Length: 69
Image 1 (cartoon, rainbow, N blue to C red):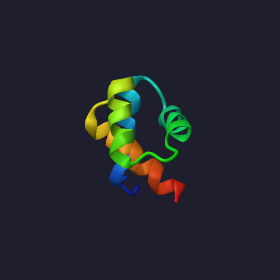
Image 2: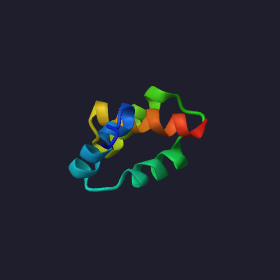
Image 3: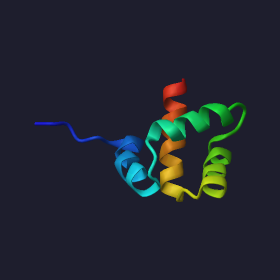
């Protein structure tokens, strides 16, 4: 029996399918941009500059920030 993915990572398959790029692509962009920016600033940047929906952008930023700590 496999454990079900929970939290922000549960969005990753749909993000990859919808936007045609692996989540590593989005994490690389966040690595370059994240310095000194707050969570919602990064979410809004992904939405405005890259066309992501709010939930997908929020999931990527939340996971990125959690693994960066």
